Amino acid sequence: CPPGYYQNVTGQAFCFACKLGTHSTSTGATSEETCNPCKAGKYGDKAGLAECTPCPVGYYCNNDGMMRALLCPIGKYTDITGALECDECMPGHYQDGTVGTASCSSCSVGKHYNGTGANSSALCHLCAAGKFSDKDGMSTCSTCPTGQYQPSTGETKCMECTAIDKLKTHNADHTGCIDNNALRSSSIVEEMFSTGGAFYISFGISALFAVLCGIMQYKREMAPENTVGMI
Image: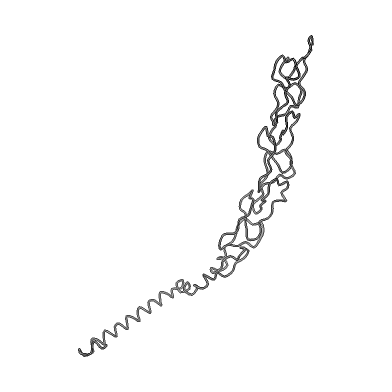
């Protein structure tokens, strides 16, 4: 008898096939006991198999002696052959209404999902105001950087508060802009330097000291010798 078959009675013109879910690599087998159950990760969907078939991607075989592979349910996947179980879609991903898949789809930019095993794209939530997501498949949205804000939901980037006013910064939840008190308190100095006022003031002070020094020198030169020390 060839592999996958046996004959336990003498004088027969045929051999018996190993049942579904089993296989045999032996030749000349004389007992059904040589037909071994397919191991988990494989299946036997035909009688008389010498080898069992590995479960394909998108399927799993979680028990010995399986006669068919099982489809991965919605929200799960497997990208390897011979899988014993399917993996849940990772955070930021989902499986929308399709069974037996080798991968999950990604939540699009501006959205996120921080759970596993998502079985619908509806579970991909819009990023809240003050946050953004600029990549597919994100589990969480990022808070706008310092000095930036985003008043809308589902956005892929934030905006600079300084585009509104150079003395603005973000509020507590990055949904808008407020006065930057640290910058506002130094605005006079900033204004002086930006408009050149500081230069003129420093020049004026220097000129005043030069005039005073000239007057003092003139008085020294014109005063009698015995009164110079009094000036």
